[in-house]
Image 1 (cartoon, rainbow, N blue to C red):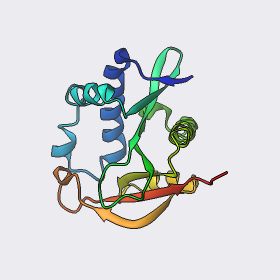
Image 2: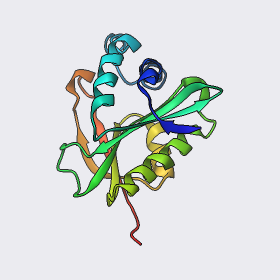
Image 3: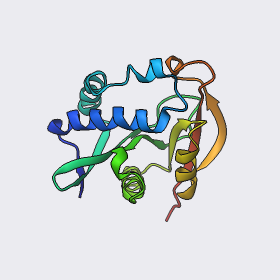
Image 4: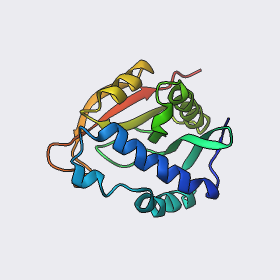
Amino acid sequence: MIRPAREEDLPRIAEIHANAWHFAYSDIIPARILGQITPEARLPVWKEWFSEASYDITVYVENRTTIGFTLTCPARNVANPPHNYGELSHLYLDPRVVGQGIGHILFQEATTQLQSKSYEGMLLWTLEKNAIARDFYESHNMRHDGVRQDEPDWLGPGIYEVRYLLHFASG
């Protein structure tokens, strides 16, 4: 079941977020940085985002347990974003359910949310070296537009994010 996140979901969202980082990025981000990514460290950030009116956090719940989530929002003003694009800022799953199709369901829900707000398209940032995520987004017709950045720089030297775009068909 997909539903909007509730405040009581935030500890589980923070847990999934931290666990997913360790699962997906252990070969990309230095261990000293990953060691700082804990549920306890992520929870205050999620509480802040939850209170942000322009942010939509959606959870995927199975057997009364949240196993994945997304956060969509207006596109952050990074690298001159395309006009009237929304952003898929986060899409993470409990590592135990990766490969079961839940990410595809959440991706489609995020797309629908942004379309319902009359955005012309969706953008996202992903780590340049995260081939699995890049393949996933490309399977949904997203395309890297050539933009690359080293923010957030706290991830370490040589770690870059790349921007992906999906233009929504009109009509």
